[in-house]
Every structure is written in C-alpha cells, then in structure tokens.
Length: 592
Ligand code: SAH
Image (cartoon, rainbow, N blue to C red):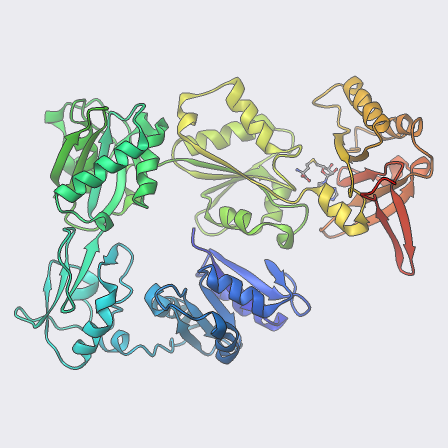
C-alpha cells in the first residue's frame, strides 16, 4: 500500500489538491490547521510534518513554492537512493516541478499530475528528456540490478556511446534510445543471475512464476530456503519472481503467503478442475485460468498456468518434507492481478465518530483500496465518496449477521472487502459480528481469508476529549440497548459499576422505541452516587449538529438523548471546573 501525501497551506489550494487526487486515489490530503478545513489530516507544524513524511519514504506533493520544500527538507537530504518523490505544484495549477526522488519515479508522477492539470511537467533530468526513459527508475515489473553503475552508464550514453539491447522490453524499444547490434554499451533484460559491469545495465523482468503444491503443514523457513536454493542452482534472479501460485485448496496453508512475503510478491490461487495432466492446456489456462490437472504435477501445472501460453518450465523439485516447487518463465511480464484469484481480504474498519479528520490514515487507505464497502448507509456516507470501480453494499443498521456473511462470502472469492463501522469497529460494532458468524457457522472458504481489524476513535474518546478528561481514571462502558441482551443483565452491570465507583460511558442510551431505559439506569445509579454527579451528554460528536453539555445526574432526562448520543456519568471523584467560557469535566488520577 503506497500512500502519497498532498500538502496544502491554504484553503484555496484544496480544490486543486482534490483535482490531483482524482488521478491518485491513494493520496492523503494534509492541510495546515489554522488555514484549511475539509482535509484528511490537519497539521500544525509544517517542518516536522514534512520531514517525518519524507524520512518515512512517503511521496510528497507540495502545493506551494519549490523553495519552501527544499529548504525545509535540506537537513534530512542524505542518500538519493532512498529519497521518495518530492514535487512542487504551483498554487494555480500552472506548473508541476519534480524536485527529488528521480530514482523512485518522480518524473513519471509529475507527468501523471501534469496530465490531470493539462500542463507540461517541468522535467529537467537530461537522460529522461533525451531518451524518453528513466533508466534509473524502470517501469514497474523491471528491477535494475546495478543502479550503482547507472550514473556513469547514462553519462557515457549522453556523451554519444552506442548501445545494444540483449533481451526485450517494450519500454526500452519504444524509447528514444537507438540500439545498434554491436553497440559499445549493453542493456540486458534477463531473469538470469548475470554478472553486472559498468558498461552493462541489467534489468530483471518479473517473468518467473513459482508454483507450489503439497504444502500442508510445511515449515515456512525451510520452504523459503529451498526455493532460494532452487533459484540459485538454476541461476535465476530473485528479482524476477513475479508471484507465488497455488491451488485454491492450499490457500489456507500459511506457507504460501510466507513464501510470497519472503519474495515480496503476491500469492494467487487456481481452483481445482480435476483435469488430467494430458488434458492440461496452457492456452486455455491463460483465458480461463481455473482448471488444473490432478496430482502429482500440481506445482508444475500452477506454475505453467501462471506463465500462460508460451510459458516454459525451468525447474521442478520436491523437498523431503513435502512441498513441491516448480518455476516457470513467461515470455512477457506476468500480471499477477490478472491470473487466478487473489487471497481474499476482509478489513473491519472504524471510521471514527465524525468526519475524515478523525479517521486513521490506515482506515483511509483501506477504504480507498477496497473493492467492496459494506455497511450501514449512514456510516458509508461518513467514509466518503466511492472511487471508480468500488462497490457499495448498504444494509439496515440491524442486519449485522447478514452484513458479516456477505463480507466473508465476497472476500472468499478474492475481493478486498471493507466492513465499515463508525467509531471503533470492535466496540458495539461489526468486528464481533464477523467473528460470531465465523464461529457459529464456519464455511471452509472463509479460512483462506486474511482478516484484519483496523481501529478507530470511539465515541467515548471523542466525547471525553471535547469536555476535558472525564475518563481520566478507571471507567467502563455499558450499552443500554436491550435488543441483544436482557435488561436484567444491564441492570446488574449498572449496579456493579456504580458500586465500583467507575465512570460509566453509556452507549445506545435511547432510540425511538427504547425510551424508559435511560431513566431506569439513572435511578439505579442515584442509589450510589450524589444527585450532583456530573453527566456529560455528547451528541453527534465530530459531526454536523454536535452538542456537548453537562447535566447533574438527577436532572438527566430522556429529552437530552437520542441514538446519536453518548453519556459519560462521573464517578464520586469526577469534578467540574468552571471557566469564563464554560466548564471542563475531569476525573483526577490521584486518590488522596
Ligand atoms: N463503534 C461505535 C459505537 C457504535 S454503538 C464507537 O466506537 O463509537 C452506537 C452508539 O455509539 C450510539 O448510540 C451512541 O451512543 C454512540 N455514538 C457513536 N457515534 C457517536 C457520536 N459521533 N457522538 C455521540 N455518540 C456517538
């Protein structure tokens, strides 16, 4: 997941930033706090924010003067091989200037942005201009094996040296480089591990497919070491590995993704078609990659299915502990996203209680990358507009199990699904619902799904932050909804919490149908706490129509609350601090 940061220093740059973001769906908009609103992340310190993003390798697009960016980053410029792309875009959109990160594709990024703004990118890199190609940052799918030789190599080219090409790559043959059969310099495209030298640039194309089978219970470290040995014996470059391929039934085995992670590539799966080895047809596989032959040649078949028509088997070996590995080479780059199916991913995310400013960058990224968003329509609206190709599945707020099941079924066929809750997804929300569905009615296909919960700020924290520090000491949360649990249990918990002198956060205090529970809860607590106990009544925190007021416990009434309200009932230690513009509420951490 590669995020980019777009930085704006004033509100008038926000529309331009949004225009750029139409071409860069992974971009996150950073705005200077006092001067911008409606941004994804507000910052107060420009220098430290910029330096932090830069040193963490995040590509940065500053809608500001180039000089500000350079001066701010000057202290952290050290190794140009590690520098992420840095660009300045003029506030009126008239200029796009790539500044740093030539080795990480800054010129391509500048051209991409310039295309949206309908201007010319101010590319100044001579090699890039003269040859219409960035030899130092090849397009994705190619790895330059000897970047240390590239600078001298390009200088010689610029000085007029002739060059020949061994192997083939369209980005080179379509560039302005003119290749001659007996050129002095060489550009070599190969999956083989070959000697590099200052007069030979070597690019490894992602053309190797690793097919694995017999993976049940296999030790990951052993398997990875085995594959490294196979590649090395066959003199094949690790950089040319495009993906790890296996049968659908093996998707549950952890070793498959352990291998994919070790080679920094994706895993893809083919479903078992039961076609005999003789009937295996790689031509068909390419178009319809779901029919695989029977054992004992499964690893070979998956590898060849991945390389498609024209693929060749290079290696097939089996480790004693079981795993069988085949390595096949494709005549062209392997586009893993088009072969077999991906491991399904299910993200259960919390968008925070309000708008984008309270949503974590991780959640924003997941939402931007998901193929399917599932949730209650109100929460999906909070998650923001869809990008092209994303599907939105709306549900009624009550249909939790159906929502969870749909999410699992979609992920099981290889989609990237985000189940969206407000606040934190683990607090009275969808995370528990998903695990409950899996626990009660497990389906074999669900076990291959990667499930990840991405936390969010809960209403409790947001309400507390607005009024001071009412949950500064021990507290608990109780949902007042008796739809999923009986009132007798709620009652018991309220009494226990009141006796324990915990601050109590009440979620779901009332709805149109549930109107008496709040008064009942208040009366129970009044048996243990003073009628003057402060209660924070926080409604729509972080959203339009926000209100946060403080009542005394005895005054609390159903008129104060609805289903978008959270209550924080103080303990005996909770205090109100009056100040000229209102009150703070806090619970001290010290017991004296
Ligand atoms: N997962 C959510 C809670 C869902 S239960 C979270 O972590 O916040 C729904 C209840 O949460 C609502 O009835 C209300 O009590 C509370 N709530 C959610 N968002 C809120 C907000 N913005 N302001 C006040 N209360 C909120």
